[in-house]
Length: 351
Image (cartoon, rainbow, N blue to C red; front, side, top):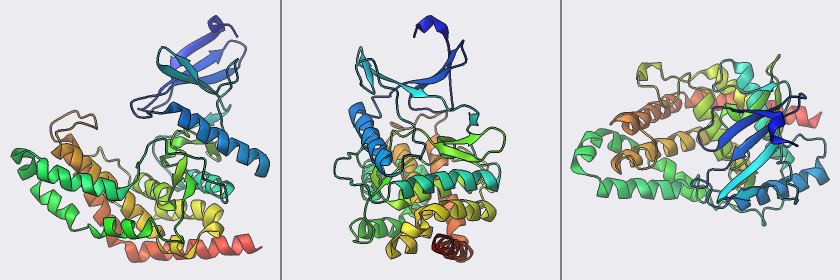
C-alpha cells in the first residue's frame, strides 16, 4: 500500500499508546499504534501473548472475533524502527466506543463481552504466557509500596494526608484477603484483560450491542477479580476518579446489576466456588488498590500519575476511598444481586 493513499489522524481517548486512524481513499481503514515502551518494557511479550491467545481461539472457538495485528511483509506482528514499536490493527466497521457507561444497557453489553472472552479462554494453558506489566494487580506489592511511602513521605504531605492514610489503613483487611486468595487452589489464574474500562469494548454504532473486546496489551494471566473489579470501579459510579465534588460519588445499583448480569451470563458457569464467593470482593479489591496507588503517588511527590494541581493525586485517592465506603454500605443488597445473577447464569447454561 502507498502511504500517500491514506489520511492519518489521531484516534481514540487512550493515554498510553499513540493511536492513529488510517482512512483509505478506497474506503479501507486501519488502526496504527506506537506502543508506549515506558509502560510496556517488552513489546514482544504483548505480541507473543496475543499470538498464543489467537492460536488457541482458532483451534477451539474459530468464530470468536479476536482482533490481532496485521503481519508485516516479513511476517512479524510488530514493526521495530528507531527504537519504536509499531503495529497495524484492523478497523472494525460500524463500531464505536464510549468513555463512560451512560445506560445500564451499555454496562451490560460491555461486561458481557469481557465475560464472553473469559469463557472463550477457559481451560487455556497459561505456561507460555508472560506478564506484559509485571505485578500490575498485585495488591500485596501495592500495599507494601503504600506503607513504604508513608515511612518516607515528607512531613508536609504526610501531615496533610494523615486522616486519609488512617482511613485506608483501617481497610487493610482487603489486602490481607488478597494475600490469602492469590495462592488458593480454587482461585487459579485465568487469561484476563486487566483493563476493563468500557472504552475497551467495541459496540455497534446503531444499537450499542457488544461486538468484541479491544486494546489487548494487558492480556495476561491473572485473577477473575481484576477484570470484574475494574468494571465495578468504572461502570457503577456516575463520575470518575477525577471528580472533586465528592457528593456526586454514589453506587448506581441498576448499573451494578446490569454489569453482573452481562458478565456472569457468560463466565458464571466456569467459576469455582471460591471465585463465586469473592465476586463482591472484586469491587473492593480494585477500588482499594487504585485508591492506595493514588495516595502512594501523592506521598512520593507525584512521580507516576500526571497531575494538574498540587492535591490532584490526594483528591483522586479520597474520591476512591469514598467510592469504596459507598460500595461497602450496600454490600447486602449488592450481594443479593450477585446471587440472583449466578442462579440465572446456571439455569441458562443448563438449558
